[in-house]
Amino acid sequence: MSSATEAKILEAAKEVFMEQGLYGARMQDIANKAGINKALLHYYFRNKERLFDEVFGGALTKYFQNMEVLNDATLSVSARIVLFSECFIDFLAEYPQMSLFLLKEMSANEALFREKVKGIKSQGQQGIIQMLSDPDMNAKVDPIVFMMQLHSMCAYPFLAAPVFKVIIEKSGHQWEDPNHLKLKSAVKQFIIQQLS
Amino acid sequence: MSSATEAKILEAAKEVFMEQGLYGARMQDIANKAGINKALLHYYFRNKERLFDEVFGGALTKYFQNMEVLNDATLSVSARIVLFSECFIDFLAEYPQMSLFLLKEMSANEALFREKVKGIKSQGQQGIIQMLSDPDMNAKVDPIVFMMQLHSMCAYPFLAAPVFKVIIEKSGHQWEDPNHLKLKSAVKQFIIQQLS
DNA sequence: ACTTTTGTTAACCATTTGGTTAAACCAAAA
DNA sequence: TTTTGGTTTAACCAAATGGTTAACAAAAGT
Image 1 (cartoon, rainbow over the protein chains, first blue to last red):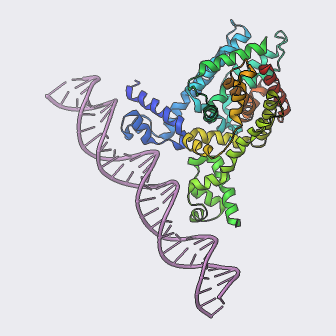
Image 2 (cartoon, protein in one colour):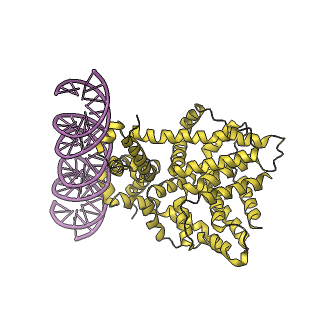
Image 3 (cartoon, helix red, strand yellow):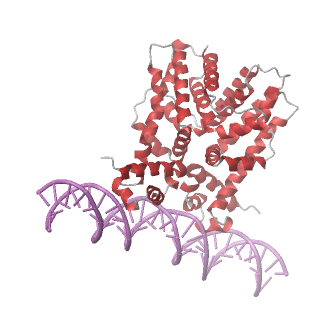
């Protein structure tokens, strides 16, 4: 079923959409990057919006799949949260523009966003707050503040990458593009520090 | 000098650019919203990019001006950083949509963004990294990681407010809308914790 | 062997879009 | 009253862009 061409298109589309957004992306650019004719795009994916959905629809599914690790009852609470942060970072690294795109949509139409969230049975995110609110945990941190800080530390570096790139370069240091490992260990350290 | 028409154009342009971004915005839409002919846009502002600059040129400058408090040599390093975080949060609280918009535009067109940043002589931001890189500080944290985490904790809660709202409400807690104070104290605690 | 289906392309088409031109409008100066 | 200078518009234009068509090639059935 899934031809090599289709895969090439999806990969190219992902790159171009990420770089340029839905409006900025040009079908011709996607075709060029995939090394095929523009008409072939429309052969595989009827139009631009469908292609966009195909690319980012898969991303959304992945997004919520990553949250599932929070439900692994065989691990300790902090271990679960560390695992979640790592999955979250991995996802964001693959789709850096995704969260920015989602945030824009949410801000523009909060009601619609709430509607869509209802259709997804994800117990992951609120799980952090609930787990830390459990009296047995005897957590010293404010669960809500902690959850917000955790999300922030994972997500914002990808959103603000252009800003950070400039700031870091201006300070004479080198911007390490795939510094996910560094970020992961820093977040992990933060989690341990806050929850112990 | 500043005619009523020009003001109408700037107001309309601001709205349309905010909603649609640089690429998504259409000159015709801006003209319609301003209640004028499209050609008049080009009479007042030669082209799309100039109009865009006129509207948002100041925003970026403001964004980086917040960093100036870091240069107050009469305070300790950590005190300066705390002060910066408070200024930054105040700024973001005042223009939440603006920062989301700016980040989106920066990601969509990084080259253009870098071009604009060149025109801003800001010595603040790299200050954090440089101050913490100073051997005398003997800082235990990685300066770059710390700086990124600090920015993240300040900015992301405003960008992701709709998400957090849903998550928090779903967990049965109450979303406190103007929780800048809570955020400020949490960030301050983080700074002290990391730098001591 | 030949017929059908699937994959691929070049050439086109219709519309949109940023931008231009030349003429009209209009208030104030001469 | 006429001139003048800034302001505004309708009509255009060239380029770009999303999408279509018809022809063709390559497998896949039969």
